Structures are given as C-alpha cells and as structure tokens.
Amino acid sequence: MLTLQKRERRQAWGLLAPMLIVMGLLTAWPLLRTIWLSFTDAALIGSGDNIHYVGIENYLYALSDPDFLDALWRTLYFTVLSVALEGVIGVLVALLLNQKFYGRSVLRVLVILPWALPTIVNAMMWRLNFNPDYGSINALLSQLGIIDGYRSWLGSPDSALNAVMLADVWKNYSLVTLLVLAALQSVPDDLYEAARLDGASAFRRFRAITFPAIVGALSVALILRTIDAFKIFDIIYVMTRGGPVDSTKTLSFFVYQESFSYLRAGSGAAYAILMTLLCSILIALYMALLYRQRQRGVASET
Image (cartoon, rainbow, N blue to C red; front, top):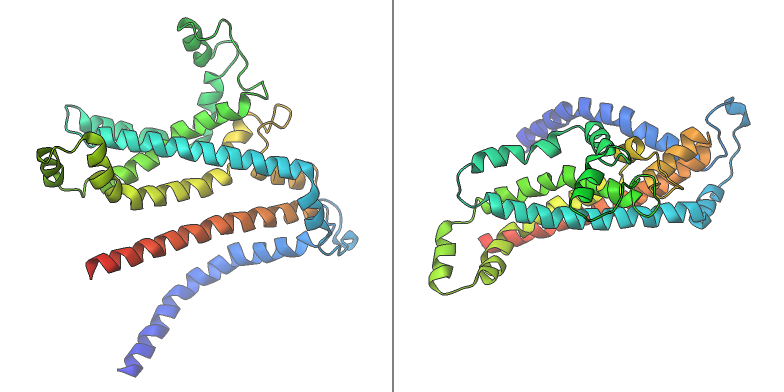
C-alpha cells in the first residue's frame, strides 16, 4: 500500500513537472531578476557594466517619494469605491435576474456582454462617450438639464478618475452579478414562501435567507475584483495616459512610467516589488477567506 502511494505521488509530480518548469521560467526567474534589479541603479538602456549595487536605497526613496504615495492613495480610492459600486450594482442586478419574468433569459445573456468585452474596446468606447465635443454623456446630461454646457470629463483633474471608474464599474459589475446569481439559484423557493407565510418583510427575507446564501460568492467576487482593481492599468492607459496632471496615475501606471518612460529600471523594479507585496497581502486575505468559508462548510456538514 505504501509503495503504491509513493508511485502515485511520483506520477503526480511527473505530471506537474512540465507546468512547474514553465512557471519557473515565466514567473520565478523574472521575479528574481526584478528583485535583483531593485537593489541596483540599473537603467533600461546602456551596458550592464554601469550597474551598481545600492542596497535598499530605492526602497527608502520609494517610501518617501510623494508621487509614489499619491499614486498609492489614488489607487486605494479607485479600488475601494469601484469595488463597492460593483458589489452593490452586481447584487441588485442579480436579485432582479433571479425573479421570474418574460425575457429573463435574454437579459441574463446581455448582462455578460460588458464583462466579455475586451478592456481596450471598453476603454475606447467610454473615451468616445466622454468626448467633450460629441460625447453621448454630455448630450444626455445636457438634454436632461443636469449640466448647462458640454464638459471635458477626462480633461479635468476633478472628474477624470471618477470617469475612468465609471467605465471600470460598467465593465466588471457583471462578474459580481454572475457569481451572486449562481449562488441565488441554490436557494429553494420554499424558504421564501415559508417566510412570506410567516409575515416576514422583504428586507427581513433578504437578511435571513438571501444574504447568508450569497455572502460566500459575494466575498470571493469582491476580493477578486479588489485585486484586479488594485492593478488597474490598461483602461487608464487608453483613456487618460495617467493625466490630466497625474490625476489618474495609479500604481501600475506609475511603475510603467518609472521603468519605460524614464528608463530607470532599478527604481522601477523597487516600485514594482512594493506593489507586488501589497497585492500579495490582498491574495493572502483572499486565501484566508476561502479557508474560513471551507471550515464553516465542513462544520455545517458535521
């Protein structure tokens, strides 16, 4: 029996070996290289003979760099607000699509389209919508009497980041909707019927039946979206290029400029490592949440 287990274990490692080798070449080696560069003053151009070891100087400079700290707070603002809006809208749409009405199947298909749309296409579409001369946002708000003239939403430091956030929320709320809707499908209708017969209000039914059923899926969706929003880059690159006046420069865009625009590979690597550490914290929270939910599931089954 023990020999069979050892053989199966060897076979499992043999099957995993190609994937581990590929991951090592594509992930581990670039990561180690980046860590090494973060302790040097390397430039993106020039010969390797001019690289000098500077220790933790890049990290100390990064932690005291006001531009980096501003990008960090800007990223946190974008992450918290966009994920919160996606969570609220996603749950509301999921509750709507869980009801029985004519055309529900069509709407369930349509709600997937924003999420399935490539990010670049979505960014270009919203950039046109926010165009100060012929954008649909200005036309709609003007006709409704909300604004008295066309505005440059992406050209103003006060509104640019919120405009990008709107485009991101429109694209990604459907992910929350799909996960929450899948969780709602597992709730028996008999529970709601029994609650109605007992005189429970809609809010009480949501608190006692719906929310406990969707909290697991909702937590996973929000944490995944938090990690993704924290790394936001492509939609900002297409819509604003980090402007105006750096008002939409997030951490990812900051690292990109430091490394590829200013050609400072050493300090850019240090910024990237700090960002990776912050993302690792989010991933650790995600794994801890999954483990906690798994333990709760095991406890409820026993």
